[in-house]
Length: 383
Image (cartoon, rainbow, N blue to C red; front, side):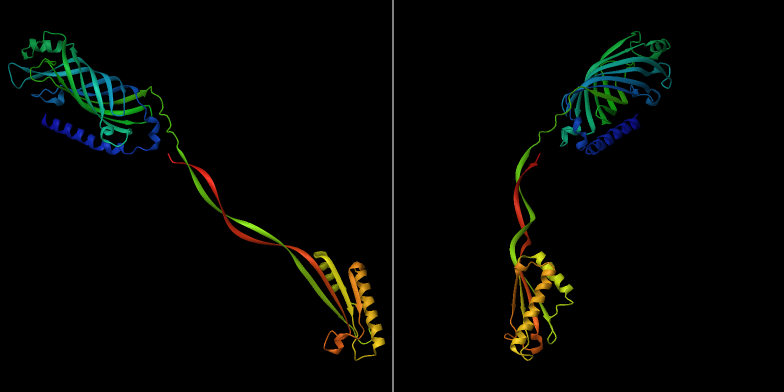
């Protein structure tokens, strides 16, 4: 008996230590289980013993079952109506020999109103844990019947009390612990141990009236409404947003290109000029308000002023014709010839030349990247 009592105490100690640790595993996924009040119905099965202190209790364990209907009123407190039974066994001592004993069977039913106190939520920091340890305290009525075996043993001179009574009733006091784990929102598994104190010789033996019950089972929870979602709270914040902006600045660009056409003595032909004429054509497409000046010269060390003036005129006219034939409008050409009166170069031979200059304007947009910022109101959830 002492070994059994110690084992029982160690089992409850282990249960008390491990349950709070398992309860800490809760997180946001359990939010929809914080619903109170909730009804429940439970079924359990296990073993019981009447704890006859003078005999070997290993031989008097019998199967037992329980049915419960109750409610969890808050995260801490619940209550239930519990029905437990229905098989029991006692031990009788012979009046002839102290070593001669016999066992007898009978039936019982305990009806108890129990208070359930959740130790995890009572001492923890949260109002819900998936694993919980409940302290059980109850008061009810113990009823036994079918005592025929005890009557038969009494007739054989076994020491029993009031065996002529076929039914017995007694008040029942209960203390116990239950470990429960929520498998899902509506279903929990549990293990429960309770010590029941009987006010009367409920087992017809004169020394022991108490009973230990060990059960395991399921509890189905129902009713209640799903917890309302927490009210969302927002606050307005000013965010600074940086970005790159391309700034475009328009301007007018002055364009200019020059082309020098050199001649041999007494020559004025304008030949082998296709590539340069193409460049002038491209310039005229890229620029607006274009003007072209054509200025022709003769070197002073060759010929005389009259002949040199004729050479420069011929060179000028042929250059203008080549430009017009290439598609240049005659109205934008300003043509002038100088003979040998003007020498544009210091080297004499280079002054047999026609200088063609094109000018124009071009609309240009300069782009640069500027770092800027703007402020923006933003709604941020804070709860």
